[in-house]
Amino acid sequence: MKGIGRTLNRTLAVWRETAVDDGAGGQETTLAQVATVRGKVDQPSPTERLMAQQSNSNHSHNIYLLPRANVRRGDELRGTDALGNDQIFRVLSIVQPSTPVYSKAFVELTQSQPGG
Image (cartoon, rainbow, N blue to C red; front, side, top):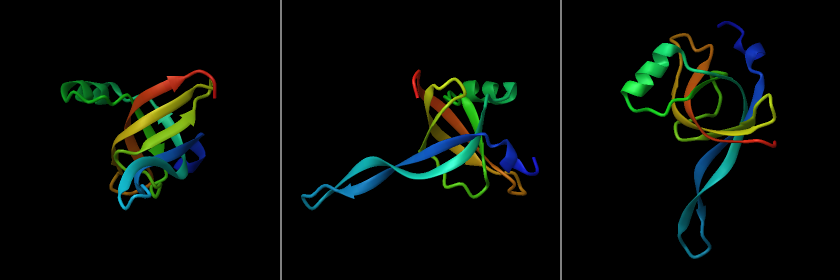
């Protein structure tokens, strides 16, 4: 998958749980946008679907990213699909091939709404 950059056809906002001061000497956890990345959203292969079912995973999509993309397990990736539907994906895990030409995020589609 050499030159993956040209296939990354979507812009996704990266949202991450962040601790913020609550104004009373403590902290609370909130979601904050920490980055914007380019990605390509795909359906998992039949083998990946089978493995997800066998392990009770909610893996619904694969998102390909640049290898240095600021994306971690537990993040939310938010964007709009080609039809203008807003989508929110929760990152289940991230993997890279032995030669890091891309990162692959296994994600769960948690919300899809018409309207963008």
